[in-house]
Length: 258
Image 1: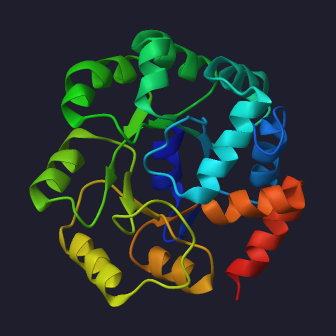
Image 2: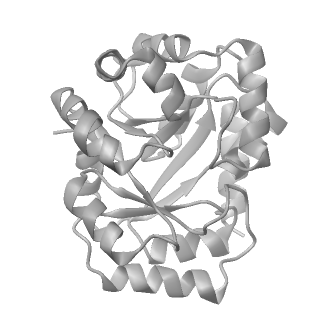
């Protein structure tokens, strides 16, 4: 069974926590250290971000980290090589997050082959058109047992949400707002109403809520309304401030408790 599916199958009533970091920031060769630190801290799975020059879904924190990573020399091939080097040393499932343009240049079959060869279980491509996913990407991803994770937002129609639910596997990435990534102090009534509406749809796939989770209030709200939460900007900021992934994770857990 795909590792992502295993996580959800074995979680019971436990709420999950996934973290995002931008590979290549703050250092080019820190990828393995960050992932191993997450595993030591009991994170359920990790979203490994491949930096891109035009990250449409990302806010200023992750954009800045991407700029640093690109200046450090991070590339898709380098990142996949880093992941392949540690795949037999870790159990934590890896979700590769990157944009469509580098994937197309890499070549779809080569890309998914190398993802699988590097121990990656799933991929998020925010700007992948759903028609292209169905016609081109899904058959290739299925061949290599890679889950393609789709995002929904408050602007996504019920019809499209059900279409995504019927045609994907793994989990649905439920974006907390229609804006870009970035920490928020709390989720307002409009966001909570959106969460409640999605809950009422009784979707087949589990959901993870991301964007804006940075403290106890937003974490608990996300976990109450989905299988778990995804934290990105908050951890990226702490990792750059601390320079050490274990210290950054310790600080994150402290901040999420208050």
